[in-house]
Image (cartoon, rainbow, N blue to C red):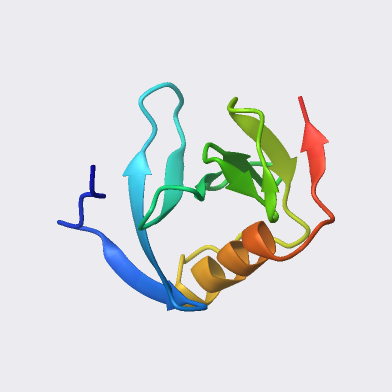
Length: 106
């Protein structure tokens, strides 16, 4: 099944199309920056305006490793800006697919 594109922004990173959008989380009071690769192998959500910056990995791959299939939270090694821009989204994508320094949190 394809990823829905209506109302979502596109960014291409290393020849892979990613879609990103901001939405209100249904289970918390936070807005989330959601990033999805076209093949859905990388899916991350970043809660905005939290005390501690972190991402939730929901996809099959995170930092170039297969995941356990569960949602996992990882500390972001950089701050989340007040305004979400393509530059920030690119930074999250590159960290999510290339780096290996993720610290898992519970």
